[in-house]
Image (cartoon, rainbow, N blue to C red; front, side, top):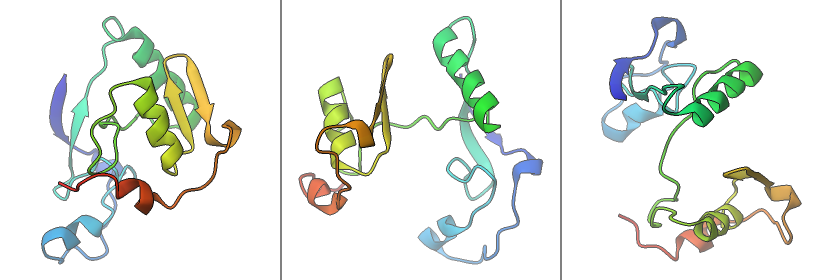
Length: 133
């Protein structure tokens, strides 16, 4: 289920400079989970049901045990301007052309360092293939 809720006050941080205007307001780190915390300390959250989403729920539990964080960011898989990834081939291409470290496809974990011809990329060349929105 998708909800909007306030980030727990225990996880919030004092914002050094919250006086910015427009996009500058986004630069302040507002919580210990900044990737999901909006400027008003809210977050769009999804709950995961162990009965309907068993495999993903187990992944979240294992991630929490290993990292101390029960949060995984769920986002579309693409880089700005690129169409959303719709196949394993597209996923691998995006993975190899950007500076992602790991790609998980179903039961496979692909580490960039283990891939043939894996190099660190300047993403500008890859991104130039796509028109920005």
